[in-house]
Amino acid sequence: MGKKFEVTNNIRKLRFFADEMTQQQLAEKAGVSRQTIIAIEGGKYSPSLELAFRIAHAFGVKINDVFDYRMAEK
Amino acid sequence: MSYQIAKTVTNILSGIVVLVVYLFYVSSRYQADLLVMDELKSWAQIMLIFIGIGIAMAIVVQIVFHILFSIGIAVNQSIKNGSCNDQEIEKTIELEMVEDEMGKLIELKSMRVSYIIVGVGFVASLFLLFFDYQAFIALNVLFASFFAGGILDGFTQLYYYLRGV
Image 1 (cartoon, rainbow over the protein chains, first blue to last red):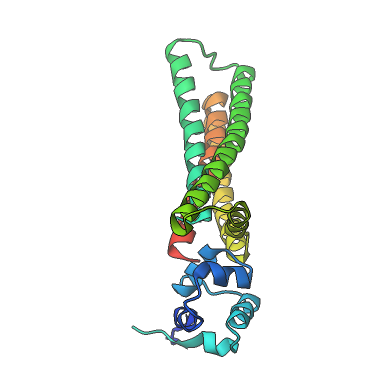
Image 2: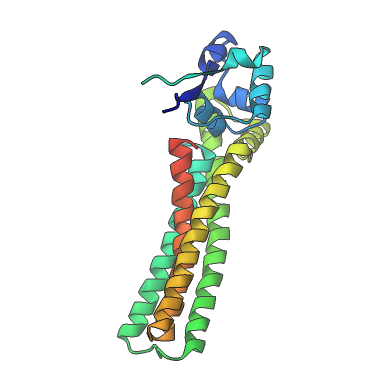
């Protein structure tokens, strides 16, 4: 059976270090709704590559500082 | 509650209201012996009227919803900041109403569910005709399947917004 992988993110942490940026502010910078940011942050939605880049750009970091692809925890 | 979830709940409720009113109207006319079951023309008339009511209601509900939503944002901002700025309210509304990739994906998925329900309703109505049920029953099943499709479309959207895609 194949190993299960998942996309994880550091958005909460990055928001904290970005002077406690709100989800609304991040949504505005990334050009999406707050609902989408909530879903991404909660791991309920994996964004498209373009949106992932836009989020990384909003924080001024590289995409792999925001998202990670790792083996799912059991 | 986000704009998308609130809008979906409103759509579901308006769909349910129209379906319930239709069922209530038809059953009350049936009990009063005012329905001519075999006359498809009168059924078509009733259904066309209710399609019109459904469209009008959807428009009115959306207008009322957006007014209430704007008031909600204004109240929220005045509680937070102590005052409310028109431009800020407009900006917040614009930001909340953004239709992005997640919204489009959810819409596609929910539309698929809706098509399945309508398709099943259509096939069921054909089966009813095939098994010699009266045409008005098949017509009602088809009509109800459209409304059920719309309502389930809303529930599917709600599910994906709350549980994730």
